[in-house]
Image 1 (cartoon, rainbow, N blue to C red):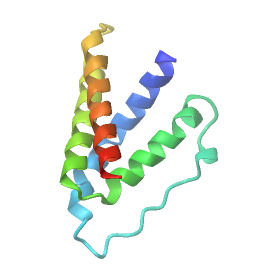
Image 2: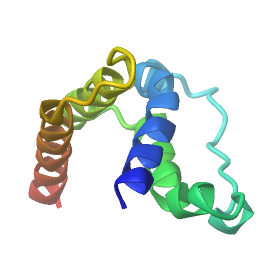
Image 3: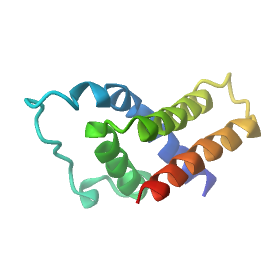
Image 4: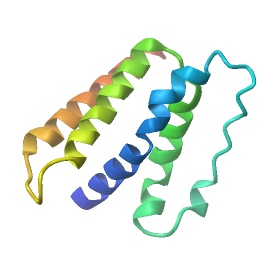
Amino acid sequence: MKARAFAVSLTIAALAPASLLAGCGADNPARPKLTLPAADSFRAGACRDAADPILALGRLTYDRADATVQERMNDVLAAIGFVRIRTGKTYDPRLMTDLETARAALQTECVRQA
């Protein structure tokens, strides 16, 4: 389970540049519509397990300009980045705690807006 969560985190971190650019295209009417693959087109195993969160992140970061949600998403991506750049094979449980705190804050913000 930890390996799956870590794989999802790494995959999401790979999409981080999309979130940084998400606001840039919000006021560009010429921006093409987001086209995402079907979840079942992801390779079997960890990739398929992570498909739904990856696709959801793509939808969220592509054209959402809501500043509060974008700030919370950036917090999640920053926390993932700290997990990714840790030195060697070290493990610091605070990094995962920080990631969960950021994820929970994003979830709370999104639920509050519903």
